[in-house]
Length: 249
Length: 312
Image 1 (tube, each protein chain N blue to C red):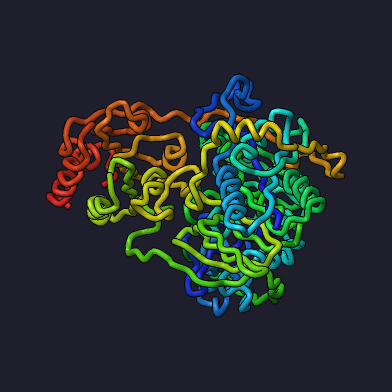
Image 2 (cartoon, rainbow over the protein chains, first blue to last red):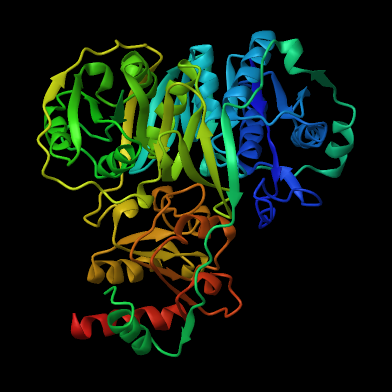
């Protein structure tokens, strides 16, 4: 079977972003960009399923500006077979991305789509669920274990109180959580090989999707700063402060 | 138009997060209905009816909702949607799974994990691991919203809303429940605990977490962990506090052996009082701490335990 994975280009998770003074957004010029960590986990899982003989082809899709091709190349260097880039400079929100992915799914007909549970820039945690809804497919979010069966997949999910296992019918959409796997680093030979792998270019117009945002961003500001704290010298002093100054214990 | 809140329930009880979601919903305007979906879940519906401010409880009792399978719940929410201006749920693992699916089925946007309500269609939410706060306005006819539990006080008790039985939306047949392995703990839930004691990579092993459990139990608190501690396998994922784990804002947060990575700070920096115990005085956690103690945790934590025992 084919597996489609969606990959998002985001500000590197280790970068502390700065809010623009005019409140219009965060500074992304000259900031290190990377593949969203949960998308790396999605790519890794798809490759492992192929390596285990459960899948035949892994296709990495990214939606967004020209630079998203770098993110697709990263997926290809990890081991994905080919890429699809839906190029647009529009401000893409999860519903629009889900619609673009639905159109790509209609073209490619994969029985399984794996995406990250959440992008670390907008922190939305929506796209996989929305894609499953638009396709009328089953979904399993926050996967920590995926066991493909015959026409079904058993997925262990990270839920608030522990773990839950569900059996979903294929075709299906799965979103990845942290403990699903540890993504590999791309080796230099594989990075070189990835340069020759094909990336198909598409546009929202070709896919018949209107990517216009539905949420209007009024402003983006810095969170309130915490007041500077103090260093205490001993545990006794700490307990005294908590009891008599902060009065929290 | 009314507002529908999807209750977090386990058939027998209505989870505390529901009351926080109700508070957020009441701030959006109109009267608030709560949907309790489950199997043999009347006890949960009766609990929901007692939440102050709730005008009506809808009870959907059907085998399809016994384990709150996402596809079935989303179909139910969509079936009920035409009578509502807002569909609201706590940003729990259930709410986060169901609401985006329901929104897409309705062809509307969803607003995730809001921390403030500015108006009926305008909400504040954190982005970039809490390093920025976005104010967003939903332009669709139906607003679908998930609520950051730690950012809203729980609505009190004292209500006596009528319970109305509503028909289910059937079983989509897309998924089935296989089993669950839930942590059993007598401690309060992480997201609603008044005090949280968390451990990081500095704990060195899961075997050392009982040190923190003793402190938590003395203070009536919950135990949490950083992503590094979860990644290292010290404790299960449900302990994780952070951008992609649980978001908490207790009165007191004690971070032990936690360096303070951006993604961890995102999950706890709205706590009222933060204590950091770390032997590395350069650790970023000290920048958000109200009280910092530069010390070896394996000395400081037992000492803290003894000190708390003295006068409590």
